[in-house]
Image (tube, rainbow, N blue to C red):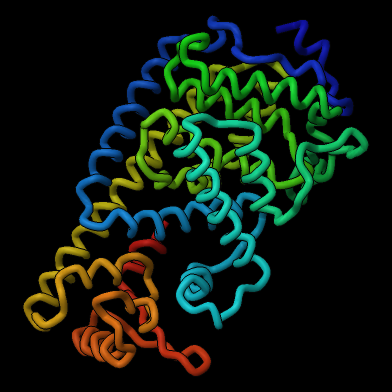
Length: 373
């Protein structure tokens, strides 16, 4: 540990960032294994309960968007739930500023998800693709002439002070990324619990800081994708960033302590606790959505039996819906779609809202569930 402290200077590029894995004695403790057990148990429950839903796309389109919103808030990019859901419902509404940033995050999440499903591994190419989608740029690994420093956030006396300078130089960064991806993907050479790998790899990615910008958001996407690669989840539905927002100061302090003091243990326990707590949170949201779905389906079947049974699922893919979104090979008429929505309005299931020349409808109860922190 003393050698690490002596080698580290926050004002100089940390090219001596140690390769993975860290020494076992810094990681494998009784407290870590207890936290591992709790996190794995919560994730297994989340994976199981998600499979019971009649329409998992309701999670994909809602929970994933909540994650995108929270992750961008960590970077001080704020928008409203209402603005986001409207933007997904009606293209004419238009995307501006922060809402566009949030939806780019979600697009990057899905790009990474499809890469993981196709390749069954996390690659540097996937990392670059996620970054490019988030920032809408074509550049790749941070070039050597770019002077990147991490500054202290906030408005206090130390705001703007350098807290960390990541490695510099394309070859250095690529060496550390290659080591990171090997550690993540090779379970024979590195036979560690996947959640232990996730916590350690998240620190390492943030410490490498391979891109000019967007590293925090890219790292949080990779965190979720790694769970899918290791079959801990089937879909990217873990709402992790909400926990980090609430514990932001501790999150950054523990990151710093790994770098300066080699204190892996508190960092790993923190991240495992984040997984456990957010898995439990997501389970509670799924249960609320499922109960609302069942009640709504029963009401529609009782009061409007002419509407086909799979119609209810469309109302739960996201809080707002437009007549155009209902059109498919079974509902081909816009007038039929509008009639159905008007009938649901009369039942109190949907609330109409005029945007420009078009009327869209809000599933207010679903919106309220998703908006609750």
